Image (cartoon, rainbow, N blue to C red; front, side):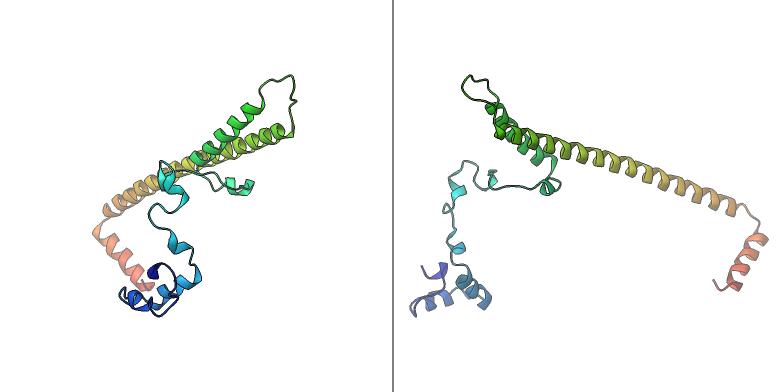
Length: 170
């Protein structure tokens, strides 16, 4: 048990010394002893069929945090809330539509709005990238034409232009 927690007794130190661990690593054992107990199949995700690749829903997310999510993550949240909403919207003679349903409808509307806005922003960025590429192409063509015009000048004109530039301190 020595190398999984900070040594408790003198009998643990020789085994720890065999590892040639740096002092900061040993100090970490003292700071966070629970963490070092996570080994193969010792945490809750190991029992899930996809292990660490599995997605787990835990906790709340703010509206501001939605803007940082990918489209795939937004879709996953949207599907989960929509599924829950559909289960609440089943017709019943005994149960009335409650505030939980209204909250879920609002959440769906917010997620849709964020997704649509992010899609519009991405389309705008794409248009801007195309325009920038066109400007770059036009600048390249202009430079080629300027070079062509310059190379068609006479030798005397080119020397005079060079001398003028050198006189200006170039």
